[in-house]
Image (cartoon, rainbow, N blue to C red; front, side, top):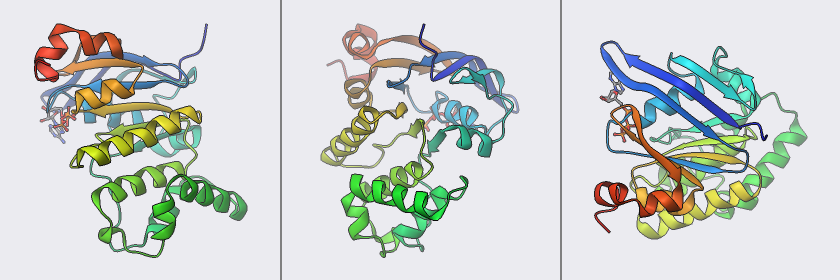
Length: 239
Ligand code: ATP
């Protein structure tokens, strides 16, 4: 049996009295894009925050078979987990290059590894290479998302968790970003994709979970979910 890349079991996360994630279990096999869709406030961001170790949680969390639930964020990054947050969290007054360098910060890297990571990012995102000396706050929305992805790639992740990468982007740019995400998967990076844009997410993923009020309401192969009448009625505009 293949060892799951990520295995979350009976995860609970609370903010004081608010139980934001209530007994979520999910798994992601190596080389998969798995999506979590659901409405505003369903607990999607909270789920990713807990998986990354940014929020305290109860339950089990295994990464490539290892129990990582007790590890701090940096140790999870060392093992190959990486999160691109919804707000991208770039440093607007710093250049593209400086933002990329910050992505390498938490992994001890020598100069030549750093250089080859940068070359790889510029190879994947030629526009970041062209704009390397430009301030991040002068980039377009799509370019900022590319920079957020590029910064994450500097840590050589094996599992990339993406929180609403399509947020605020025009449809054509969304398709471009999703194409990049599929390209990453083809190059061996597994992806956990959280999206409100259900159609785009299901079309780009292998398996999906529907999260509603902190619980998994439905799950299945993305193609099946796309055709599920409940998903169509609630998330695909009755299409
Ligand atoms: P969105 O798509 O709007 O980002 P989401 O599915 O990512 O939504 P979360 O942001 O994880 O949902 O929020 C889940 C629940 O937890 C919501 O009810 C939210 O109000 C609550 N919540 C989130 N962050 C906090 C916080 N820091 N303090 C208290 N409650 C919070």
